[in-house]
Amino acid sequence: MFQRASRVSSRGSSLIFRTMTSSAANSSAMDMFPCSDRGKRIYSEVIGFMNEFVYPAEPVYIKQYAKLAEKDRWQVPQIIEDLKVEAKRRGLWNLFLPSVSKLSQTEYAFMAEQMGRSVVIAPEAFNCSAPDTGNMEVLHLFGTEQQKAEWLEPLLDGRIRSCFCMTEPDVASSDATNMECEIRRDGNEYVINGKKWWSSGAGDPCCKISILMGKSTGLEDQPIHKQHSMILVPLDTPGVEKVRPLTVFGFDDAPHGHLELHFKNVRVPVRNLILGEGRGFEIAQRRLGPGRIHHCMRLIGMAERGLEAMCQRACQRTAFGKAIARQGTVQADIALSRIEIDQARLLTLQAARLIDARGNRAARHLVAMIKVSAPRMACAVLDRAIQVHGGAGVSQDPGLAHLWVLARSLRIADGPDEVHLATVARGELKPYAAAAMAGTQSKL
Picture 1 (cartoon, rainbow, N blue to C red):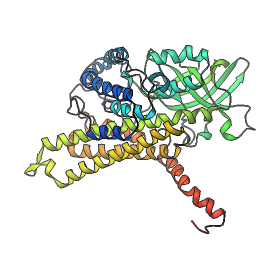
Picture 2 (tube, rainbow, N blue to C red):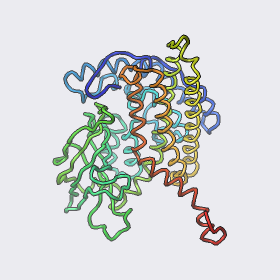
Picture 3 (spheres, rainbow, N blue to C red):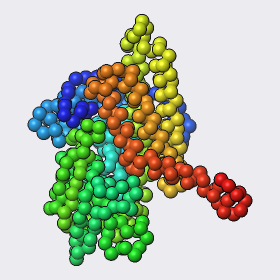
Picture 4 (cartoon, one colour):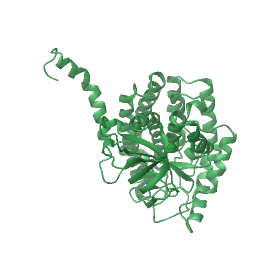
């Protein structure tokens, strides 16, 4: 946790090992958005679990992982399993899935922020980690009874983990229609050939199943968005090759990992296809909306942790004859960070509320906005926190460097900023373009 790929440290840090209290801004936001009494109660229990179990587990995780890494870095520390048992016992389990938790997207959004405050440990402790959450939602919505029994049930129980194989190294995957990985029917089997990378979670020893999106053969006469399919591929199937873990600015995020996988004449039974041939984009659209809410709220939690570290450091250090906290530039950094965090939170909650009220499609415009604003905000806040920490900020000790890397990578994951900005711009231009075509406005 929070180490460079080439190095493991068991030193503590003021950011990672100190129990933090949530900002009052979060409580006031909850008063502004519809939350049931049950949702508020579970939210309070999540905060209690974080304070009682998760924050104290952070140094234990580092110590256990350092010991494991002496032999094999791709192992999960025991403390994670211990936390999962306790969270399940308390009913704080699978909170992301409305049909199970009975929570709205808005209510869960507040909990996702709390999980983001200890982003390596907390989501998995509550069985609310990406990409498992999205994969479980796909199986819940579209899986057959056999698929649910074989894969959804052990995922919901936390016995296995999963990965999602979509991005490819040889094409611009920001346009998913470029995908070249082939899914070909051969009797009672599908044969899969192609390359995937950024398969997050595939390095985890508990990762047993992938949902792969590829291009189905025989659908060339269909519209481009109806030529792709999703299929379940167990990672122990012959022909699945784990080529390498990819690093993100030098971090490989072991034991989770982001792997490059090659599929060479991989055969899976026809029953592993999800929903039907050519339904891949349809499934993806249902998967992405809530998942992006989760990502953005976790980013807000990460940024809150960075701001707290910045304030602590500023009050503890003296430079040029006065506390850093009295320096005007540092005060401006702190103030801007608070403003930007609260702006991102309110925008994300607005998107979650719209999903609750009108569904994923109606919230597409807002979801694109938060997918740009939240990672940019987190990067800015964490960068300021790093700067206030000086040399320590870029080291492994406070954990800020790793948090920044996670935030920066999410400006590309689930679609780069440019794609989402184009979505927002099209939405803004649409009424003007319609008016111009109708002859009521000659120029935009």
